[in-house]
Amino acid sequence: MTHWHVGGELADRYAAGSVAETDAWSLEKHVETCVGCAARVSAAVRARQEAAALLDEVRAGVLAAVAAEGTPQSRPVRSNRVRPLASATGVLNGRARLPGSATRTGRLLWAAGPALRGAWLPALVLVAVGALALAYGAGLGAATRPLLLVIAPVLPLAGVFVSYGRHTDPMHEISAATPSGGLRLLLTRTAAVLGVSIPALTLAGAALPPSAAGPGPAAWLLPGLAMTLAALALGSYVGCRTGVSSVAVAWAAAVLLPAFAASPLEIGEPAAEAAKYFAGPAVQGGWAAGALVCAALLAARRRSFDHLETL
Image (tube, rainbow, N blue to C red; front, side, top):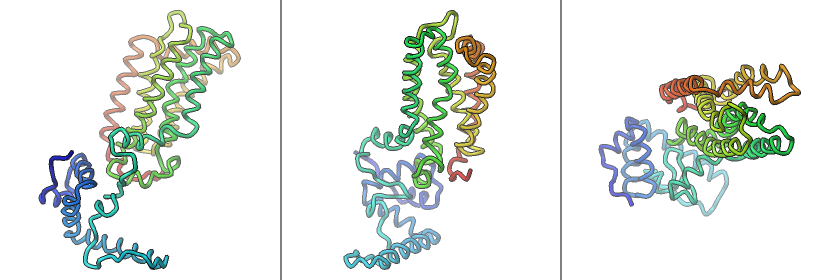
């Protein structure tokens, strides 16, 4: 399956922390199944003075915990070395081998899992089904599509809100410390949110009666993408939770509240007024430009996600 092995020079650079992130990821994945390379990397790490002291401290802590539990069948640990971490436990640098994650699809599903749990997914289904019920059951007809369009861009933000960060993910500290943590994990979960919300909301919009000269069912895609990227970019400064909340509040204050405050009991007219933020090539071009700017800022700020959130 794997046709290369870790050489001494690569192991030394990895131990020194000078390997590129993508190369480090490839190396760490390889040593999960190659005992020889795991031993080579482990030896290179132990050869560094600061790493040896850290491993001795970890070993002492493990032995102290075992002694405190008083387990008579505890396996003896050699005093002059630490077993290669990958071959002994399937963990290297905090990244664990998970049952059922032998395939790339399994690993992606595990990483994206928190994005698709909790109340967000039922809420997404409720919005899509509710829009159809309002159009055909409550008699709102063509007024429902603009209403769905102004709500749709906020729903992916809610999915990102509940999928990443120490406030919502109980495994955040562990997952963020892995090589696949940080921005990579955040983008994986964001992609999972968009992968579910885009077809659900677009299909629901297509099933609604079209409004005269109104925007199409996919008109919310660029605004939704731009707002999601804006939330991630802002999150690199203030934390994901605060970034998502700020963008959602700004959208509500700029679009939803002014439109519906004028005639709160009449849905059709304010929804059509709010739909102007989606209609026309100039408006869509502005959203596309905003998405590109936010994506560039996110790329420039990608290293900020390598640290645990404090907000």
